[in-house]
Length: 171
Length: 171
DNA sequence: CGAATCATGTAATGGGTTACATGATTCA
DNA sequence: TGAATCATGTAACCCATTACATGATTCG
Image: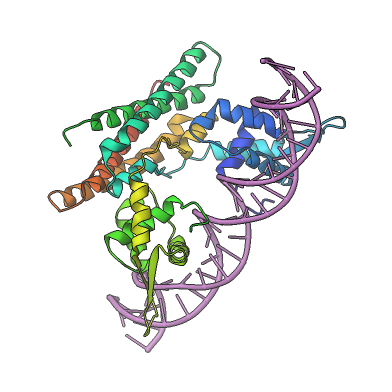
């Protein structure tokens, strides 16, 4: 059936569409509002990936007759199955950090020089996450989404602590 | 001069070659031994990227006459300058986590099911890092490399703690 | 001395990023 | 009513991954 290995982007599309059908543009909005914080997707991908998945029978495509002729996608049974299988399979894969600042540190960049910009950015992220978190308290949000958010907050706080300790430190 | 924006891979190549000239294969070995832990690079990239950088005048290329006709690269003054400029420029960019397990969690995967494989992988990584760390104690290793290693250890320990708490937890 | 593994490199493919483009809507 | 911004989509390019391929070396 499938003549390719699905990418994380594929599963993001499937996962979001299983929650609710929508257009690629809808997906863009949802990504930005939710998991985009820890796994962003370029909006152009959402057009190509939905098209691919539809071709593979994992999505249904329904095109507007009038006006913009927008395409609305919904997940098929086959798509749901593929998503389920993926969700039920644990992975041993570890994520690389791929932090640009750390790459510079590795090659000898000055920590104290890097710190202010990083600190500001990480602090802003913490604030943003905490606002979302508070807003979501009591809301009927799936547990998994809450957990990823909390992991994200934790990670950002750690980063703030790290970069703080580099500011004007004794070296 | 340059008609493209250099990628992180470019700077990795420049950074490693500034430490010491070498062939793409040498680079592969060095990456695997050092920064590959938090920023891996496919070996094929090291061939294409060195070629590109040489074309752009940031590397010198010296080809063996005999035998394998291996190409040895070294950084040029222009290359050093580009690297220096990059190292001296702070960045506000934040890294996304892009953790496959977290993506599954986000979409509702069962934490307890995911935990064992993740736990084992993260524990192995901690052990590996700590071995390297110990081995490097007292060695004349640049400070930045030590710091990235320690940040990596910290991160992995946090992951172990997180996944441990999901094992057979009350939910 | 044959097989397995390491060393070394090139070619092909495709996903992801960037650039481009145009139709709607807000708002001064 | 014009400019700016948002909504929506397509096209092109390029880096990164994967696959392929072959020469050396180890070692049973």
